[in-house]
Image (cartoon, rainbow, N blue to C red; front, side, top):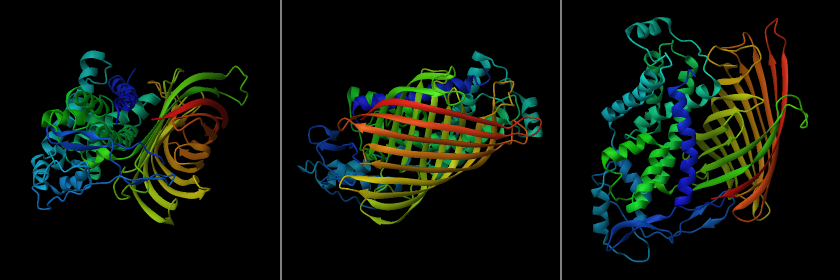
Length: 542
């Protein structure tokens, strides 16, 4: 991955992560660009990757590129763990260029066996100590620097929290739906970066959040915080773990290596710390297969006009904002292992110059999946995904983690284009949505609750650009905290079009319409709100 791309991914991630860290401490106020492989050279040993290598990868558009590997057999009775053997099994061919055999197989086998990855073994003690550090840092900042009051904990508050049990807190939307998930991502990575796999790391996220809720704050433990921190933290944690692996190149030296480690550590601080204490940050050794996963990255910029109330774009309730966004698509359905969590995920979002700086952030990554049939580009998949929703703007707010069952269908149209359609059902675990009749002392102005949802989306695409996309999402939220005995029906429909100017730039337009029907207990009258939005943008593919 080139330096420009690394800077861009890291800048976007750091903007989000710094916001999360600060808020956590102050919560009371088809054609893929290919990642080239490394090569060995006689006079330098392991050195930089050879971008001339070709490899076979079928994109969503059906196009194919070829890469010729020089095979390297690795003895299964190697002293590496099975995890390490599997990583090298998929990546060992990168130890040769295919153009010349600089080393004998015996030497290459020795090179592989001499390095043992930190993450090839479980380090429970290190994971526990790092979780304690992750708990301590935001608490210490709040206790001795920002001093909001809730950090004044002790035996009395701990016993009181244990006796009284759960409640729902009154934190603002950004704190509950972004800052807490960011903290949960750190809990998750205390295990994930210490040799535990995805499923084994999940309890660390739940445990870390549970300990914070009971012992990190003066207030009673918050049930909504526990769900948002744990579930959304798992989602964000696995994505930052994988993106950090994309950015850290174990085969480089000098300034390239320094920047590689800095970028990776900014995206995933826990992994960066472990690479330092294990010595991997300075050693030259082969990359794992996670370094070579195909990704697509898009960056867009433009402006939008959003109607806060009503449907008239010329009224006084219209806001005009500038937007900067990104869209990262990780993996490929054709090649990702359906049984490996997050071997395929998508994350996208925007920041604005309006009142809501982080205005939207979405992601979903599959937990498991099944290929249902089809050949070539005409394929059908069903996947079970972990999803994250975050929307806040002058007109409305909605967010929360969920599980998404998704049926994906692709059908070829002509020689180069195809239609990709998604049909999904949501189970929102802890949704947050706007309300007219509740306002908490700490700034909360929304209701909490679970509910079902539906996703319908279809795009005419060539695998690089979506020429036309139609999307609808609908949710029902049954209020558990906030406006008493209320429920909300939320609808969000959009249609967007993108016109490519060349292989790397396009212009586009989008129109969306949001409406909410909220039903309240007497004497509060029911409310129906609508809010259209128009957006113009340009987008570049990196």
